[in-house]
Amino acid sequence: MKVLRTVGLGILYFIRTIILTVVAGVVVLATLWGYFSLQPFMFCKGDYLLFVGGDLNMIPSIMIIILIIFVLFRIKEKFFNNKEKQAEIIDENDTPSGIEDLNKLEKFLFKLLNAFLARDEKILKIFKILKISYILVLIVAIYLGMTSYAILYPESIKVGSPIVPSGVVYKYSDIKNVNVGISKSSKNSYSPYYKAIFNDGKCVDLFGATMQESKGVRFEYILIDLDKKLRTQGVVKTVDKENFPKYSEGLDMDFVSRVEKLFDDK
Image (cartoon, rainbow, N blue to C red):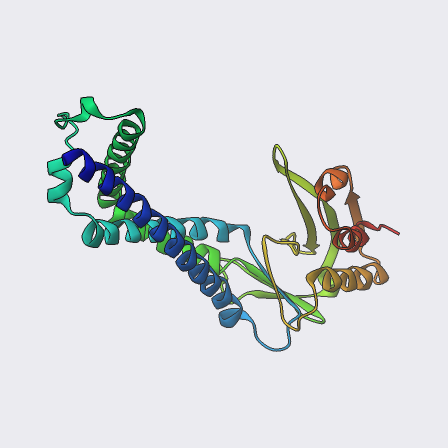
């Protein structure tokens, strides 16, 4: 009977884990959508073309995901787990009676369940110790991420930073030169960049990790139009196309052809 209850508990545990995984995915997507939508709402004024979030946004995004997972772990611990039954059936320092009579599949399920429960306890203990400092670091990370942005307007670019969260407005005529290329961030990961460098030395990447268009026009077309304006006014442009073939592998060819226009230097 105890063996059957062990296997049954394992099946219920896995079902609950799947349900929590699905819920976690929905909550994470909704939270991140709200986070990234809040930035343009806070800082965009007037008729803007493109909002570009800074790379620092990746830090609070990851931290928010971890926090959501921790909250769901706590919910599972509070509402899903029956600790008395677990203590009766599974004891890390003892072997339940009848386990010698289990077949290979039942033994595998028993050991797997025990491993999952032990892992959950360790994760919760770590979070309980670090949660206060974690929240403080998250608040700082959210501030840094929220205030790092660039907003492209028809005739200007507003650049925000943690030091000047309201942003500094530059005209297109303040752009000294443009650097375009593909950076290699890991073994098989390539990221395009379109960096505008202003007269005061400030640099902003308009091909950022997160971009939101204002009027439904795809960001490639917006950057292509900007590039044409800058070349017309004589802005110096440096192009590095070395990693472009590797970046374009597996991507939609229409999209690739539009991005490739940003690498024109004539």
